[in-house]
Length: 210
Image 1 (cartoon, rainbow, N blue to C red):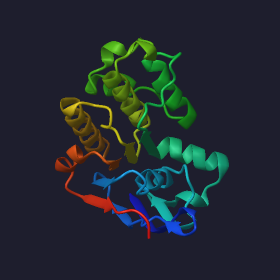
Image 2: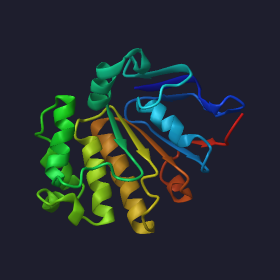
Image 3: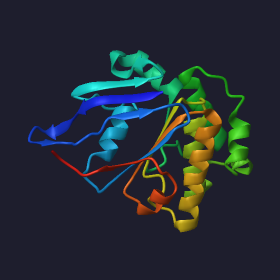
């Protein structure tokens, strides 16, 4: 489902990131853990179609991600990749439901799964609420719901537990794992949070630059 080979990226040529190969089947989970500056978020952005590697290949469900350009890449990403950013990328003037419908609109997928996703994440009662009225934990769940709205084949989460206490951090990781299994999606969590290590056995530690 997700394959990344021979990836190379650097912001300065003398400081190249040490990027391991990745090969995940549908439903498989991977934790990429490393300190700040190790390149883990850079890897997530490449896997998500947001940052083109200088060398190497990324395939999602058999499609070469960076063989696609412009609108085709945007469309493919919208249909197949769900990204949960460290800070929730949800639009504050809109309601929870409107944020999810917007994700459906841009991918061209129908919106009939919204209610089920909100119920599973425990925020169905917030469906008509404006994002500005949500707690931090609720906003994080809306961010997860938006990433799941299009039944993605790959789910990418960047530091999803960074601002959460122990109980909520464990809950969010559990939710991500459950939803990935439900959608039979490959799940990649990128974090520096050592608390997540106990929840996902398949791990890569990024040590920094080569």
